[in-house]
Picture 1 (spheres, rainbow, N blue to C red):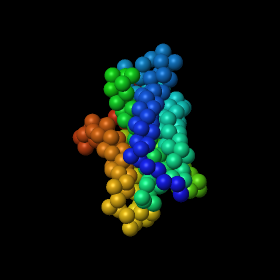
Picture 2: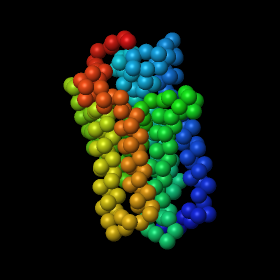
Picture 3: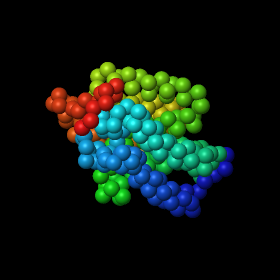
Picture 4: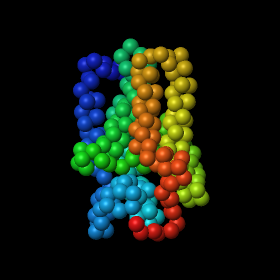
Length: 238
């Protein structure tokens, strides 16, 4: 493994943060809804994301939007992994690719939730976050894709049956976070107090804080029994 001196090469991560943030600012929901002569921000819940797209335009459009956002969150993470594969931080055996894939991904999520292009009022980041985990976990082992597909199908069934889209989404993000955290605990079991390992867990925590905080109104409505229903098999215009 080649050593990566962060003190001399920190600017690579600054550039990556800016580029990934700008990628996150590109909102597919707004683009797709405008192609249908509407602005998703003016209909339904007003949120430019997959759930509102599904409620407003139907399941097919919602799925298209979901996969666009999933790829948006996943490709930068994969890029970070490939760019730094084979490197460890100088003086350690901590893989730079472990840090890079989630560092790249979290800035996409920040851009999606707080896009400068939409006056910092974006989506809630679920599809992009799930995409981040799909690509990042697949970097661990390709066959993890089978488990990831099964998890996503289970989430789809849960949302279809309960019609609680926000809760199903948040449960999915939390489950995938725990999975990745366990893998990191196993990999770095004797080095959990290393600064870079702490940073890894810090980024995973930040991802959850961002997505759960973006859903704070949904959580309040869920507790009050007033949450918007997500009827995935019924086209319901708002």
